[in-house]
Length: 78
Image (cartoon, rainbow, N blue to C red; front, side):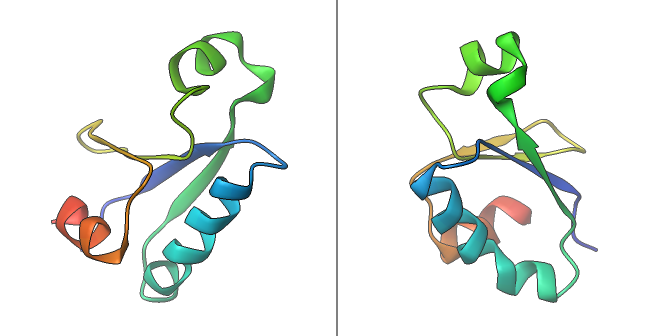
């Protein structure tokens, strides 16, 4: 079973759009990804502003910073 994840980013972020596209095949195979826009949360901007997009596992809190590819996502989800 795939863990639930969050993708931290913001609207208008080209790299965030690339990350979303990279994750789509995983979503089509059952991965649940909540898109979290950091723009309205000062703490999230401070934490993630220079690192977005960031993929975070909800179960463990582990984070995968950009840049990442499909192989890295597979390893991250194991």
